[in-house]
Amino acid sequence: VTATTLPTVLVVDDDRVNRAALAELLQNECRLILAKDGAMALERMQREDVSLVLLDVSMPGMDGYEVLRRIKADPHTSDTGVIFITGQTDAADEERGLLLGAADYVPKPIRPAIVRARVQIHLRLARQRRELETLSQQDGLTGLANRRFFDEAFKRACHHAVRTGQPLGLAMIDVDHFKQYNDFYGHGAGDEALRQVSRVLSGLARRGGDVAARYGGEEFVLLMPEAGHFVAILETLRSQIMALDIAHERSPTAPVLTISGGGVVARPMADSDAIGLLHHVDGLLYRCKKEGRNRVLTEVIPAFAAS
Ligand code: GH3
Ligand code: MG
Ligand code: MG
Figure 1 (tube, rainbow, N blue to C red):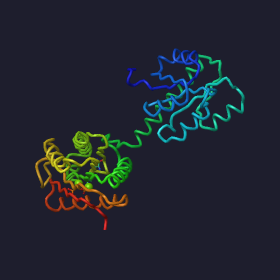
Figure 2 (cartoon, protein in one colour; figure 1 turned 60 degrees about the vertical axis):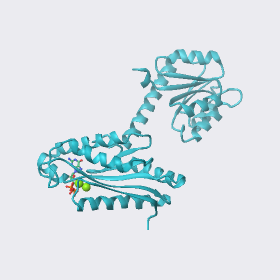
Figure 3 (cartoon, protein in one colour; figure 1 turned 120 degrees about the vertical axis):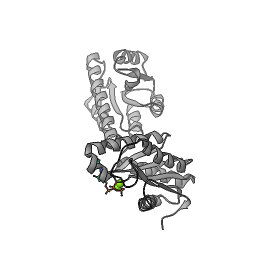
Figure 4 (tube, helix red, strand yellow; figure 1 turned 90 degrees about the vertical axis):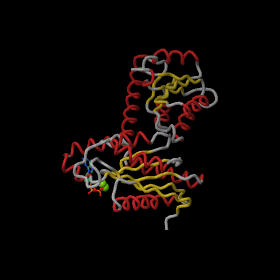
């Protein structure tokens, strides 16, 4: 296990001796952040990717219950597991913590082996939650984002574009004559070709906010919230796919595998124009297919409003 893959655990306790004891106990399981009060803990959680919080209940100022309430109220931190560590071993206190959303409850004085074991359990749960989330956003064949992830990202990008007045880039891409490719070279070769196309796409979707996704079958979408150079990027995409040099003997278009694509650089006028934009690029893609394939057609639409 390297330092970068170690999960981060936040220890919150007003007592320096307690903090040091927990830190020593857990130093080999995780990267540790220590906070001496609730305000500091909440602030660190905004900036760091925390997997688990060990939270003292009685602290001067904001107590542990209030810290937990705020962690759960913030969507950015609400999924993070919290273990209460407390000297109040009253059943009512324990119930209160669990009802507020604590994942577990550990009494003081702590028993080191028990605390370490519980931390390990909750770190494993946190990792599994994260893996599931990644899987639910990914396409299994290509590793690209899946349609569900794209739909959400596109909704957000449209909302952002409407608010800021900045245009976004959106393209729909479809592999040409892919049915013949499968029929002639086999489904396994077809899968491998889709993986190669995907690698080119993700190589072009490099900036933060860019999304390359598999929309379904042999159709892909490319979303760029910052649309500068989008027209050139789509042309690069088309030529890079040809340069993969994947032989396609049955294609009437070219001796190698090609794609067609419809794209827009557009500023949507309302959030509800998102669907219209998708239809519009789909229409451009259809035109490329009719006009001979192996081409991209991109329109610049300063103010797009679905009619
Ligand atoms: P066009 O140039 O008009 O796009 O023709 P096309 O043959 O590419 O389009 P069509 O929609 O008729 O066929 C798409 C083919 O893509 C059919 C299907 O078998 C294949 N396909 C879809 N998903 C997968 C996949 O995951 N793996 C493989 N190997 N083939 C797939
Ligand atoms: Mg096709
Ligand atoms: Mg298709």
